Length: 272
Image (cartoon, rainbow, N blue to C red):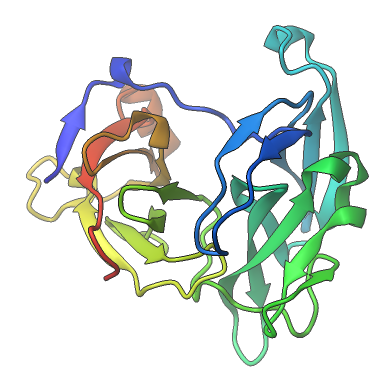
């Protein structure tokens, strides 16, 4: 079941947030995330800056998140440098760690992207890249942003996606767009953040890109798929996406193009 919602019924955030201090009970097993109470003093998000071919991903630490946003005291700490690794396409607070889904781009034997998994200790958010760990093929966590033995947790890379836990379905759900210029929203599920993740399943087609839409503009494309679990209801997920145009003049002529859209999609009842 798919349903559109007016924009006024949903608010969206700029980045995922976590806290610098947390209290939680131990999870029964690795597949069940513990309930958590956020009590911290700092928020975390991943930011991107680029100049020419150099890219740097930074961790933004807000030391006074309870203050008004224009009064925030923000400290930027480097997480990665260069264009091969993009940590934080989705940030998940789980237990005592902030887990970062990281896009890795490889060039050998061919250029492709996939996802690896990093994490930061909430007790060491002020350490930046020094406190990063990566999930390895032997299912252990090792120091650093990646190693030659880093596990590929999702076979395709997505710079914008979301991963959230749905207790009623007892599974993690990753939602994203498809390949570049795809006209579909895709869902994957897993019993744990580390996987194994299912194959992607299409759950929605962007009407703006549908060949059956008589008003379709071939210059319009859609992306930036995110779930907003705080608005989930009765086995349905609230998802937002954005559209853009290859021609800048069309964005000025039609301001409805570059405007967040909201839809409700059915939560998978089991892994697909």
